[in-house]
Length: 220
Ligand code: B16
Ligand code: MG
Image 1 (tube, rainbow, N blue to C red):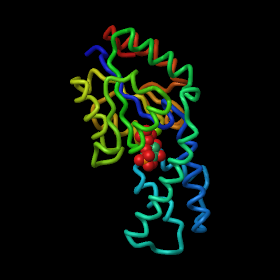
Image 2: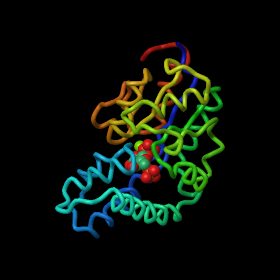
Image 3: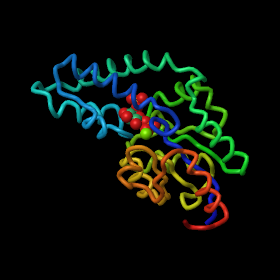
Image 4: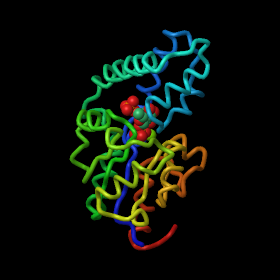
């Protein structure tokens, strides 16, 4: 089936807010004396806030009650939101903007499919919201990646079947979610390095020739 829609992950694909996630988790982990580094951080890509906290607490000597865990997650999110205040339209990557514009001109429908409950806020701060026909974020799903719910919901927003959509991801869990939902996956960043996608890209502009072929009904 020819390509008709593209579902974009947010953190690590459309913007570099993955670095702010790292900084906010690092500050929280340091404050409760839990070792946390970039290797552990790689395991948090694409997964929900509470699942991320569970991974961080694997190295904690103390056991936390569900209420205490909720308070820790809230603290991390408050710090993350503070860091997000630094974002402005100037921080939108020109390569991302030009790729989105070209894909839209070619008649493809675009949707954001992110696990983040902050996705709409980030898109607004970067002035990227208007490039998309829909946004599916962490407030609209109950199951985190690698479950395919976020992508199936996003495809339904575009009224398209999975076979006609391509998912763009930076997380291995996200590529797994795409495949579980019957989507092709194009990967950047960490997931690209780990060859988790059907297409493993050096950057977002590499999408253009791939989408051109897929739109004409090609498979490679
Ligand atoms: P929040 P994505 C994901 O966004 C991040 O990759 C992941 O690190 C984060 O834990 C998750 O969103 C939840 O984010 O705490 O803002 O709700 O990559 O799916 O766009
Ligand atoms: Mg991501």
